[in-house]
Length: 112
Image (cartoon, rainbow, N blue to C red; front, side, top):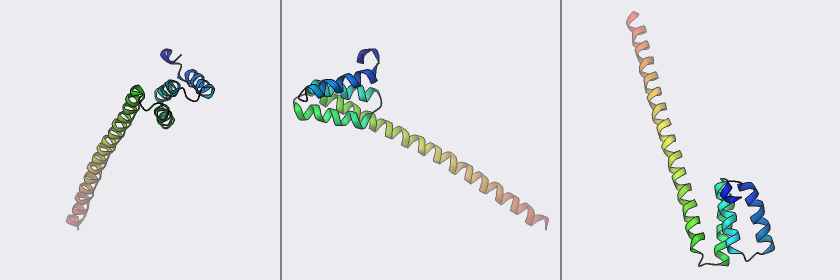
């Protein structure tokens, strides 16, 4: 299921697996992977941490958690860049509006 992009189904199955065996670190890691791929980042982080609580030598869980956190940082940086670009465009539009308004006022003053 996980390999077939059936993440919701995989999530449900991994939840059942870790309920049956709460010490199954690979189950928590796989659950976290399915959650991550389904954009449920907060839940994924929680489950990666559970996998690491059970087995703090689970380098795959460390790697996957690191990948998720790096992804979130990149996503945040992208959003910041988009907002900065929007802000620049808005400033440009405001400046053009001000310049246009000043020209109109000067024209009115010169007519009188």
